[in-house]
Figure 1 (cartoon, helix red, strand yellow):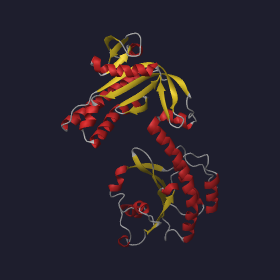
Figure 2: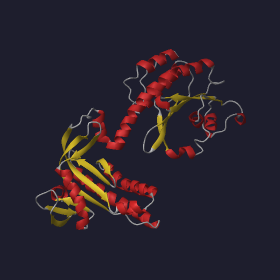
Figure 3: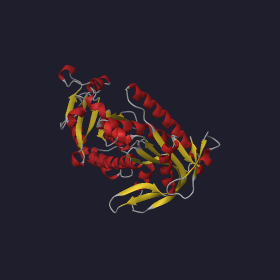
Figure 4: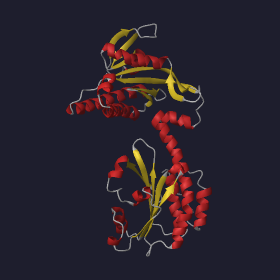
Length: 397
């Protein structure tokens, strides 16, 4: 959430005014949590005595099943809590109103003033009672293609919500569904692009860089990494174990790259391609810091594997620096946002040479010259490189 709602303290209105605002005056607001917080304040000022409200959204994200947006009376902004994929096996979800909504309920209404023994049994109702709330209502929030989310409202008014309050909330629901879906689709598009092509490439694509052949020349440090003996592993290990291994390996490599400002452009089977644009003055040093941390992560992963009776994993990394073409390449209907050029080819060849030279990480002379004063490098000699006419001087790190 970027900023609290900006509402004139003297503003008052009916739920019809709230519907008008939600329909016509939220188009410039990008984030659904901002809209939801302001909606709750406006509903209060329209006479609906909300004290607590929550949106429960299913999202498409590689780490999270969903998110809860919670607004409480007295705050000007909502809080967001991410929900992981295991939640459906936990008591906080089983038997909850959100679970009932997801299972098909069209409405959940709970009188929190009555004897708890007569009502639904779940921790969320006990929590609401402990905060002095008297009534709870939840409805499904329908999006297109059968997507189903949930929204809930609570009050501390004696006797709970009356019929007029419920009618006012229901009038808002269809518009809230449409407004929230637009923001969720925008966020989902951004998340999917960040997940599959990287944050920077995703931003460029969203900004309109979708034409085949479009691109820019970028000077960057290029890193290509490959897992050793993967063919043997994939042939002899169970499928699920191979997938788990690859995920652990890519975590060990990828997280340090992201931490130090690199951008992973693609995973290639058991390898990855990442760049560190030289627009960042410390890009080359950042790449080696990422390599150092990746080695440490791989050492920890191998120690865990040995404890379980597994074999250690080995890898090779080739690093070069130069100009690359950064943009869209592919067929008329299927594009890849990537980098190409002789500098990328060189990094790939150096990764292959790690097997011959017996070093984990090989750096070209062009890259080594940019970091030699800050890192201890070992010169390993000059070697012919396929596709290049002259031998290349290599350094190990």
